[in-house]
Image 1 (tube, helix red, strand yellow):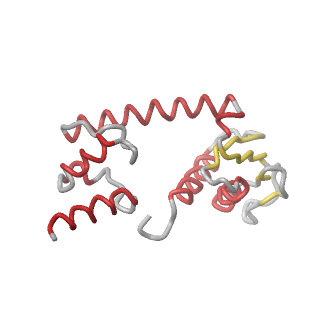
Image 2: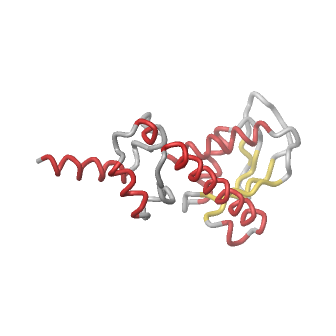
Length: 159
């Protein structure tokens, strides 16, 4: 993110990479848009992708290098996990995988890191207490607003 790419931009880029890597091209793909402007996220995915897609019933976006191909219908909606069971299922799987990864990180660094969310006081306290721990440092998003606040408060303690 230090290069000016947002988290939503990184997510769109990786969605596009996954779509491009598909061996069997689906007719329809559902995305849970992190952007409340649903078309914006879908269009970002299309711009990063080599495939031809339509976004939420808008006109086709295609990569001129690839040429004409049947467009994938890209459904990009904010909070689509509420509306589409397939997205709900994927969301549950993603949360379980994330929880397992947090457990693995805690085991690696040797202390409880909480949930990893900025609203979790256990996470915030673990970061504050172990801010200089190199094992933890590789997992911290340094461009995270929460990290900025933690570092600022730490500086305030020295003043």
